[in-house]
Length: 303
DNA sequence: AAGACGAAAGTGGTTGA
DNA sequence: TCAACAACTTTCGTCTT
Image 1 (cartoon, rainbow, N blue to C red):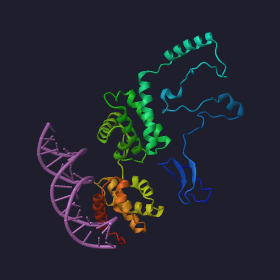
Image 2 (image 1 turned 60 degrees about the vertical axis):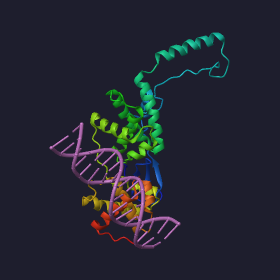
Image 3 (image 1 turned 90 degrees about the vertical axis):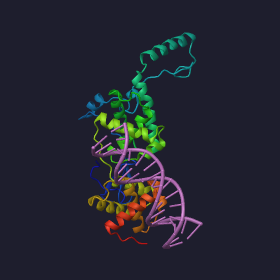
Image 4 (image 1 turned 30 degrees about the vertical axis):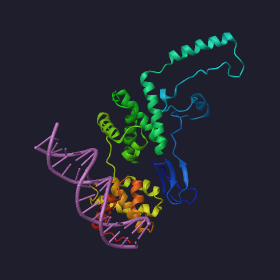
């Protein structure tokens, strides 16, 4: 969670973490106060400077999203030494042997190779989806677990990675739809869904149900709606959830209707088609939800 | 002309026997 | 494993702005 503090720009204490971009943002003026990064602090404590010197170690923090967990060495090919001087023939021969043995001794295991390609795919997916580093890290962890439990057998790496991304997004409360993930994955929606269900079962992960509220900020901002309209959509959805009107309905469809209605109420009209395209449902679905919400909630919506 | 509306038929996934 | 079922989509004709 975010610690208590105020915005340096406007002094507002309402500071929120945009979990989509991983940024810490002032809710009032929109100033990006901080970009959420990985915790770069050392894991040890030092009480004075000599202790600090003694305990400090070099190198970047170990990451799960780097194959071999960040510990790799490579020996450069070529006929120059580090300073750019040409090597003697003897040195060249020595280097060759060195490289050969280095390659043999540090040859990564087949599982590490698997993980390595998977992580490349993971990074690619997340970059297309605009997902922040913490998601990548968590997903990497789950991938390793999956490998360790020998659950990838007979499954495409692409499907497993996509399924894990889907799962982690939901776990973090920033769900992407299966459609969105399938769009950028090399696998397809059906495979990803199947793999997802399998992994949830086998890993024993407890994935909370998604609610329409999870989608509001993303859909609203994709439509360029104001924060006010976004709040309105939230208000509507809370009522909807309280009255159980969303049960049995696809969360995205309900979110779409709420965002659509909020737009109308705040004079920021978007066409049903615009909303439909962003959300990934059809206009018909939006109309159906719209009709339900309007009658059951008794909303007065400006024409 | 574009958007909104709703009926009707088709599709894919879940559920329960 | 299969059929019933609900939600959603596709398609299309009509109404509204």
